Length: 208
Image 1 (cartoon, rainbow, N blue to C red):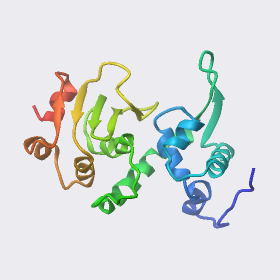
Image 2 (cartoon, rainbow, N blue to C red):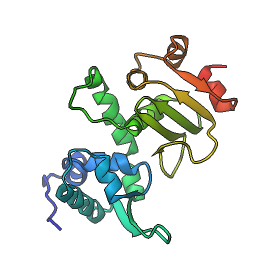
Image 3 (cartoon, rainbow, N blue to C red):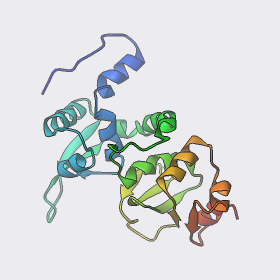
């Protein structure tokens, strides 16, 4: 394991960057906010990272008590990585960075990779209420838990149980909602967002 690099500054920002300032670390946190992930799944959803760098960052995160590695019981019997409570506290940091970087998403570059679940955290920040949502984009499906006090903030694929509401929209609408340049009523009125379901959450999101 490589020795910790430090800014050697008695400053909380510098101390935080000692732990999460390396390239790829916060994106690994973004992926682990979905819950336990296998190394191969992390590598698949972090296009561009080398196997050596990913392994090194995960070891650093274990050392800094941001993540842990454990073996799943049979029949899975695979090793997974997951965030510690301290690592999970980075959720608002990731959301704040996403909000700050959203204006840079004005145009998707031909070389840009994309995964549907990368839009989960922006929506988690932009949508009110509490409950389980299933979201469909052109790029795929994911689910997220609004108002979840603990546990995974989101997950790839359909909801593991009957969701409180289902949303259908596109990536551009997600970004506009996160930036605040588009409101939920506007997105609904313009047909850019469809919300289905009869739960309290679905009605709240529709403004009923």
